[in-house]
Length: 261
Image (tube, one colour):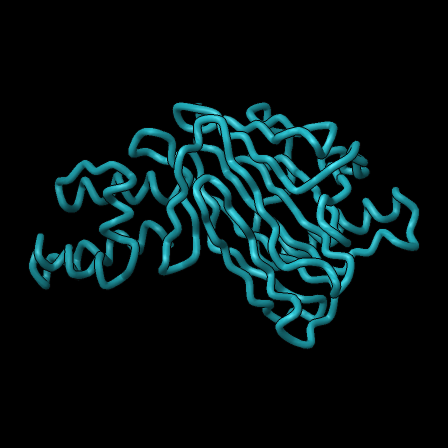
């Protein structure tokens, strides 16, 4: 199995009130597309390792490394399918909200439409299957999903959010057990509704980093151990200086950055 990309998107102000169900679904899908384009994220794409439910009351099922992750979203009701035949839009369990799910080439994206300023700011996603614990990176706000082992099943990248005018909206993750909550602070400022947020997951960097780390330092580490070493620039720099000295750390660090950027 391959590592699964797990991504949450929040979209505010794509109102379903006056529009027909089809128009509301298309508007929601276009808002997600605009946000992911702005953030240089992945487009929806068929993925045989992701099971997108026909009903919002059912869980998303996605393959991961050495196991399967299920995602229980705050959705309900039968889904409407957008014209792209990939975006499924459901009613929301919370007031003035809807949920959409899209498969992507490297995993799955969830989305939240916040239809008014009266909508809540907290949207919980319960992870199950082989997901046993969530690790929040205090440096960048990303979240790693682990099973019983030391290798991750998937990853939620640092969340971001923009309003309809392109302004940044405060957003972050909170974790409690196996519940990941995305908080979008749309009530914190004078934002224009049409807020889109999307944390993107990417499996490639960690595999390449581990390969380079082994070649440069002669170490083979689990992903969890590597994350502890490089979770912040200071930690990574201090470790490399202790291991290689100043000249070696600069030389090796430069090579790693060249490969990753």
